[in-house]
Length: 130
Image (tube, rainbow, N blue to C red; front, side):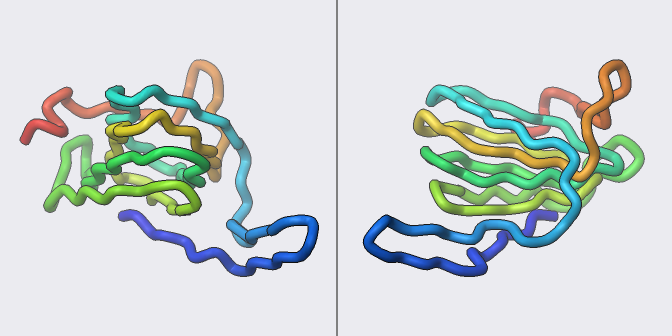
């Protein structure tokens, strides 16, 4: 459902540091997201799109659960993510983000969201309350 990606290299010299975050895949859309503490984002799934995230600043709880035929199946998983973590959420996985600290992250998608026909599907609002 969710796969964490290790940094593939780090190099440091007198100028600073560079860290390799993602060196695979064909990504079609990249977005910068800023969120205040205390908000919730997401609560949707994608039928065909994989979605990756690079946490730049902050702390976020990610709640995920598999989806089949428009309803969740299996157990929910929740994990806390923080700055410098990279992860990918598979298609057909409902995901919701609970933002605990002001946060900045980048998301990247395997398919660009088409205006009027985005691959964004929502479940009942009770997803987190079960």
